[in-house]
Length: 196
Image (tube, rainbow, N blue to C red; front, side, top):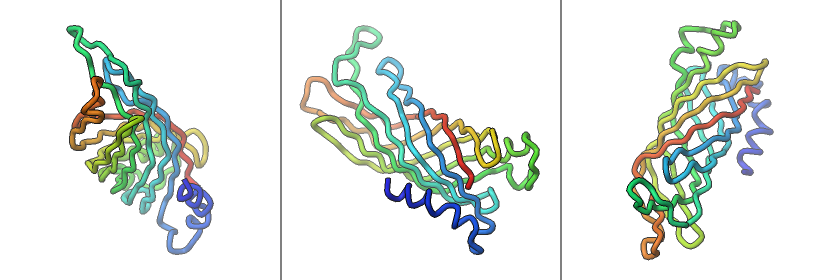
């Protein structure tokens, strides 16, 4: 959280610094869900930042989280008891690319800004899962697609979908109601993006 506040304070100064003349920074606040079918759809939220050279290629980092489900038996198809979901804290980081940015250039038309706002992220994610009595941390892959819809100068609405691929884990393995995290999980977000 301290790093995010520091980034918010320094972003305008960095954007004006000579060394960062060709760097574009965006800061985002996101809220969404982690679809899990019969096991529920926990609320997900977070913050993130990207730094891109001429809005084309660069890096990203984020701090994302989702709430788990109560550790209570949930019945699925065929009256089978489904495992509960753990709370998730994610720290993804890696490469970000805006593939159409080079084609569009620096046009200020709304449709050009929309197309320039289509981005892909590929990187690593550190996932910390926890319940009230157990926890585990794993490292996996992160793949995301985002679309920034311009709403005002310097601001956009972001639609963001991410896929996490991590080792499969089971928490509370000795308990009657298990907490299980599968190999592949997804999250869907919407949020506000600021381009300082």
